[in-house]
Image 1 (cartoon, rainbow, N blue to C red):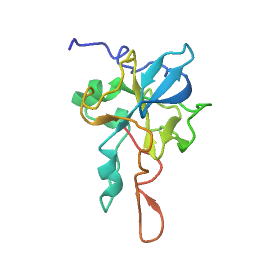
Image 2 (cartoon, one colour):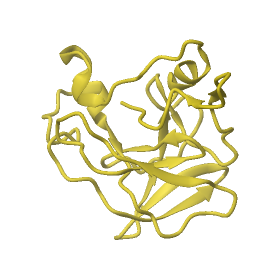
Image 3 (cartoon, rainbow, N blue to C red):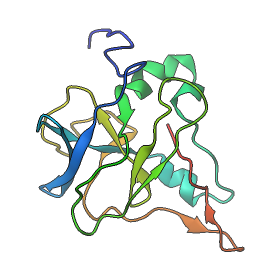
Length: 160
């Protein structure tokens, strides 16, 4: 893999606007204004953050160690809003704060923040993507646990 600049990896660059999310062979894709389909991903370690008691926070990208930045920054938070989504998906959004260049509202699908990779149009197959990020799919179970006082944890702001 060649070393690409931060701009090529999606850092310090405005996010792409998606007009819709579609389902293709059970995987989710964002459709750009130009009609290109981009596979959507979720950050798999969030499952541990949701399920461990006590829960732990996963920081947004600017808070990660420098040696992980190029990897994490490849995955660009899907901006909100999206107008068209398949029935059966619960779409919300979260504000991304904490500094850096990714301070836009991000799409949350069934409790999972969604990401895309710039210039990635390949069809999703299990295993054709880097570790830590998994392809988003229709029917993803909503992660999360409820604390004894009835509060959903770890809370509404999730990274990277």
